[in-house]
Image (cartoon, rainbow over all chains, first blue to last red):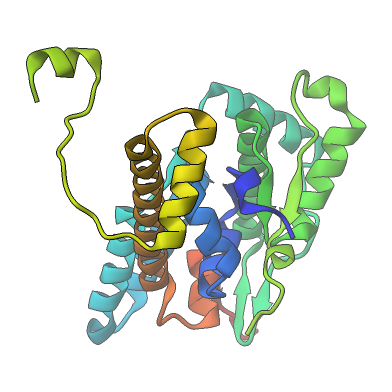
Length: 179
Length: 93
């Protein structure tokens, strides 16, 4: 298993929540040594998520959603900005891989629209670009999106001078037993 | 702390009496002899390191608890929305 001491790492949006919801000992160990590094894009996705849930919730549930939002934002770790370097690298990735590698997500009677799938794909490109610029391995829970990005960077290294390879770590690898 | 001590970076000290386990004390004395430093220096370093670890553990627990609060009580679909996946009801054609 990956040694938490070998961090810090950049956490993709879903990996951050997955590891903490799994009550991961690895995550507890990691937090004694490092901050959780995330992209500003993750903050955007969370902020939008809490806001959408709040707006759609019945009155009785709004307070607990707001408390959850405050808990999240009160303990933000190291947030990497979407600056010019990240924007330049993300643009290269998006040009190489303009379309999402998988279909929009579906669940029960719910579905992700094509425009929302495209924007999520572009957000993932920005998160991968942040990992490259920050020179941090990226912990993720979404191989279907991040592996094509890693492959494209390996295939066209001249488009990413002095950067890469993109080091990916699946968060399932950090949790031997998940309940 | 005096101004001179503050300028030199030296930390203020105070004498005290401690009761320590014999084996720990023996080990500390052995380390002090081998490093040619005082027993006080070795004990002080050990306490500082212990306190650093305790502080890190406390901070880790606080952050972990905040995360649990931030992500608890949500359904899988709601967590998907928090993770950036915008799911909407499927319209019947």
